[in-house]
Structure formats: structure tokens, C-alpha cells
Image (cartoon, rainbow, N blue to C red; front, side, top):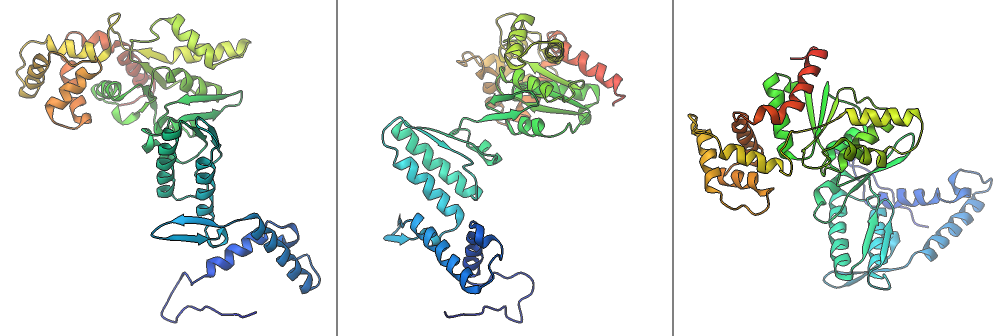
Length: 381
């Protein structure tokens, strides 16, 4: 057996990557998979050498060559690959060899041993293949990079409470962090979307408590019951948390209770108390029946009298010019598009103007009262 020692040069300081050393370290890691090689059990060196041969023979028999199409066909043995590379090829081999169209493919911990950029590229390839062959690919992951691939992946957050497991569809990074972490500010408000976030932010600013309020988005309206119910089942305090619905869905107490019972299941006094706790933490904007918040805000701005402020008058005139925006959800987006600014800035300007309308007080009343009570209770501002 030939030995070659690799040394750092005298000029090099600290940690330095030495050529091929990773091959040696990886091989020692493979030895740990074998019970007789995980520790120095043997008395004779010859016995250890024999078990090394046995371990490597088994490893080489269980692996096969992989063909990689680059500029030419290259045959690479898995022993020359990193663990992440081997996992990528194993996944791709299973997906591309799926026997029929419309197959169901399950992958556990897809991001294991994988660089974030490699994971992103793998998801893109799997998406195209699944779309072509009508496959359904279901995988688990703890990687938050997947939030940036929502156009290709439908995310479901599984949260284990002390009683049951809850599933949150179309989750957001804010909700994921909150479900697995601790409260970071005095008051937490949960809203559906950017528009509701801008409204609550304006109310908090007007009360002088914006620095004490954190606003999280939970996505679709149905998610509010899963998030609030999940936190309640986890025995986390909801005393200073408010879950705000837009007011166009799940308006009645009966509607809310039906959804709460779907999440907080079971019987007994403790379960009833949890359900009531969740119900008490819910609130909503006051909307006319059958009207969406975007439509109501747009109509309120449209009906305003002429404004002395130039910026407000500009928005009011733009509302007059928009005759047909198609979907009611697009009314506010059309205004922002006309303003030619970022969505955050546009929403803040629109809500600032809306707050001068006669309808603002009643519309925002439930949230304003709750926040003002919390301001006095917690001595904020």
C-alpha cells in the first residue's frame, strides 16, 4: 500500500482544505455504519483489516454507476460523489423511472444533505417532470427556502401540539416562526393579507403603539382557525393576541364555532374552554353584507369630497377614473398600479385617505377598541 502525506505550507495559517482529504474522512464515516468498525473492538490489526475489506465490498456491491450527461457521457461511481449528490440522483432516478403516468411519489426530508441552491434546482426539475407526467410529488422538509417557491409548491405546515397534529395550508414564514417560537412583542395581531396589515398598522400608529405591535399574515381566511386553534392547543397564551378576519367570510358566531370545532376536537370542559378562548380572540372589520373590504374601501374613497391635500386628491381622482377593474379584489391593486409606487407605500397612502372618510370609524371600530384596551391594560405608548 502506498502512502502520501499532505501538509500545509509554512505560509498557510489556520484551517486549510487539503487535496483529497475529504475522501479519507468520508470513508472513515462510512466505517461507522458497521458495528465492528464503529469502535476499536479487535485485538489483532489483521482482523480489523478484514472487516474493512468486508465493509467496502458490501458498500461497492450496493451501489452502481451513474451516467451524467454533460458535454459527453461520464460514468461516475457513487463513491466519488458527496452525500448530497447521491441523494439528488436517487430522487431523480425514482421520479424519472416512475412506471406510469399519474404516479404518487413520496420523499422524506427532501432537503437532507442538500445546499439551498441545489434544493431549489431540484424542486424546479421535479415540478416540470410532475407537470409533464401528471405525477403528484409529496415531500417533507424543514427548509424555509421553500417559501420562495410557492408558484411550484403547495405548502402545508404540520404543527404538533400536546393533544393533536394540526395542518395549516398556504402558511407563511411569520406563522411558521410563531407556531414554533415565542411571542416577541407585547401585542400580536394576525391578518389575512397586505391590505389588512396596512389597516391594522394605521390604527396602531394612530394610537401610538406601533412599536409594541407585531402583525403576522396567516393567508386564506380558513387558516385563522387553524393558527388560533393550534396555539390554544399548544397551551400558548392568547391574552394579547387578536386574529382579524376581513369580515366577508365566517361572519356569524355560528360560522366561527363550526370551524373552531373542526380544529379543536374532543369533549369535556377543557376543550370547551379552549374553543371559547379561540372564539374570544377572533375579530373582524365591520363590512356591509355581501361586500369585500377592497370594494368597500374603493367605494368610500370614490364618494369622498374634494380633498385639499394634493396627494389625497390624486388618489380620489384615480378612483373616479377606474370604471371596471374586473375582480373586486383588483380595485385597490388598480389604484396602486395607477400611483406607480411600491405596494407597501401605495397601501399606506390609500388607507391614510380612507381613514378620513365617514365610514372609517365604524369599519375599524372592533380592532381600534381592542388595541386601545390593550394599550391601557399593558401601559403602552
